[in-house]
Length: 202
Image (cartoon, rainbow, N blue to C red; front, side, top):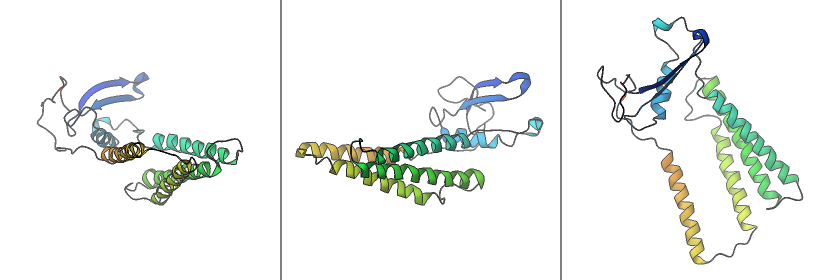
């Protein structure tokens, strides 16, 4: 009820060893990540009626950080391997820049994980931000070197289209970083029903 979510599914493990609850928040939009995470974090402190359930485990960030770091470390290793190869296209400098970018993101994400999960600090600003900046610098350098080394001969119309695509990508990236406004976090009236669904709110 507090987060105006609708209950979707409940799965109970063998002999009640665990339960998996799936819920959504259709009042804001079909899949409201912020409300879902906020509700899940509150479930870490169960009500007195469920104090026999210990410990409460919610895999929100740890698994994500582990999988992300494995992917970026592997990508960095492969890029640096291509940098040392004499048979790779685009030149060694391009792959060196891409590899350093991936490793910088790996280090930054590792520091961010320790900052948020280990120390319990807010992730808005962390020691990993410096390495995230290095990531974009290295990736920009690598992509620029890849284009310059080709000595592209584009027509003016092709340059215009390329610029429009680049600007459009930047706009989409910026717009996707903003979540829709949350109308409220106050609990609705008991027994109220959410829009566009037939299930009772909780």
